[in-house]
Amino acid sequence: MFSEYVEFPSLFQEDITSKSPKAAAIQLRQSWELGDDPIKNVLRLLESHGILVALVNSGSEKIDAHSGYVDVNQHRYYVVLVDANSTTFFRQQFSLAHELGHFILHSDSVEPQTLDTQEYRQMEKEADEFASEFLLPAQAFEKSISGNLMDLDEYIRLKMKWYVAAGAMVHRARSLRLINADQYLRLQKRISARGWRKKEKLDGIVEPSKPQLLHQSLDLLESANVLQARELPGILNSEYGVAFPTEILAQVIGVPISRFKADIVQLKPLA
Image 1: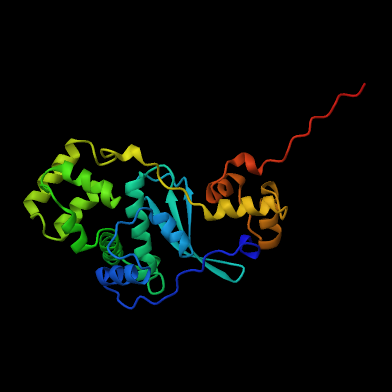
Image 2 (image 1 turned 30 degrees about the vertical axis):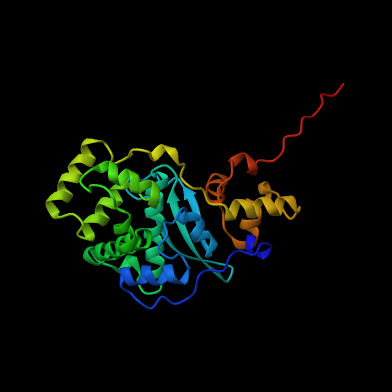
């Protein structure tokens, strides 16, 4: 219902003709005029092109994000749900680029529920390949390397340039054949030995990004006296037949649950 009062960025509709993950990522970078520069914040980039992002508590330690089209009141939105508890900023960057890959490569042509295991794995592989090329353009990434790629500290230096996790860059170095299979295996063992599977060096210096579109829209509607947050669950139920618990609404919009609670009026005791 926010779109009745607030003009959201239009969902990106330009046709990316290539279904090759690498070529599609290059084409999208060109369309969005990104050049070969590092992408400082993928979440903001998605929101600026009409893709809605929400943080949710999925309860899963294996899935960082998932996405798909949602139809509401004759409007179609592409929504990315990101797990609020299982990701760092640098890992979030790749997860969001992965979901962008699904949007560009698969959203209009693939129904995940119909895929067998092998087909699903291929779809996920393509989204990973897209994300790698989109975040780490081959020539620019290779040119930025100045140290020994068998030294994990070189990936940490590159991490602060490209805003991508060191582990993802190790995969990228292997896919570009900058390191061989044996070197890749040795690096993976070192990553495990350092405990970097869950948290890498310097992960704590940047907080994961939080979506802005929905909570800014709610702030705007409240300030204009169009509605109050506490009225939103009833409006959604009566106008759209959607019953959302306030806990879910608070997560999706990105505001404290206290925003949905009615003001408490203190009554004076009778004399």
